[in-house]
View 1 (cartoon, rainbow, N blue to C red):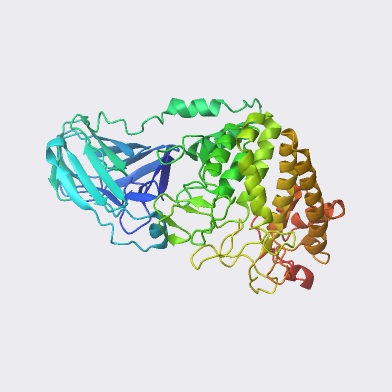
View 2: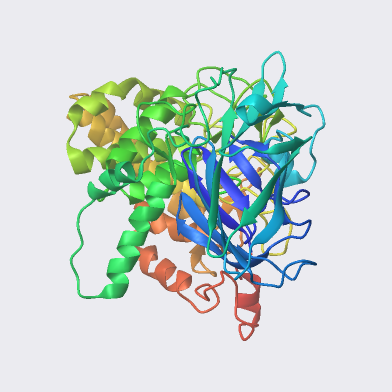
Length: 548
């Protein structure tokens, strides 16, 4: 069982023992790089047995171990507690207690290694050897150092020990003697550095502030900004509090993230970074509870809004990014760029979140601050987003390495006809047209608030025309649903999928179709709990229009 904890831009995946075993996806990660690919513990050359390992909260965990039967030790003679927290690296407190009636002698051995692999390399299982680190030991200050440096990259993992150790390459050993009931303690800190820093001798494992400003009380202050829920329904109370805690766990505020506000990451481990679509939808849903998140998301995405046409990373003027990867490896492959723009829906969602934030806060000064970003996003929708001027925005991969499908289902095989054929791009997804409709109405309200009534009126007319045409071109009467998309020939991609359900919250669905669509989304073959049909729905009509 893997256990993951995270804070800021750091996270660690380990097994129940607390070990990072080489050859797996486990490791200590920071800023999309694996800084530790091995960290294993042995007692007299034998691995301890796990009693339990679990999260304490999202940034800390505990791992309780004991010894198996060893030549000179019966089982369960000692207890081992590994207590760790992550944030700007990793800190671990290690306590070993003897429950023997006699003195106990044993050797504790710890083995370390790293590969400085990019997170995409780890996910693909293809680790490049070009970043093999130089290894050194500073015995005087009880430090172990792994370092890699090139013209445009620096990575260093520095391991600080809180007790005298014996070094043997990438292995350290402690010779431990415990009297009955005696406890032995040390600590280990792992520093994850992306710029050369001098760690002065005064710094030790005990004194180094590994977590920086990310203190528990800071997290609690952030959560306290949310509305309080008072209820005698314990399940609801717990769900609400856990949701706030989970949002706090996803906050990105590390040194690489702009200091102009909080960004929620998309998920751990592979998506622990800023995503356009995911961050915007999270901010939208959290608006009634933590509107500060929307400020941070919008400001940060505005900072990286596209300025030029760059097919390598699919950047276009006014376009909102898909994701940031600090290591320089994105879905477009290894490039000199850290930003990738291959998404069709982040730009209208950017406008939607701006509009929603204004509805909740009436913060006109913020709209004035981002007015130019708003206008550039609208221009992208009407130019680059709708190249053929048919009123719908489509996507088509520019290069050979980016995402083939660029909606929220971005796997390569996600858009296909009911008979299994793949749709060919340019592809106009149904839910994206709903986002555009909602974005244009929202932008109209924002511009009207700024006194730009002519632009607001034009946007409302465009939205009305889009709604009319969409309900005509995407509706499949026989299926009682909207087509998933239109393909390059403007043919309906006739699979019935959950994409259409997103149209209901955008307002683009005509009144005479809304009830039909609602019933279709809640029908047994769609609302199964798994996103797929039940076996009993095998008649031709339902079989043809099952969820793909």
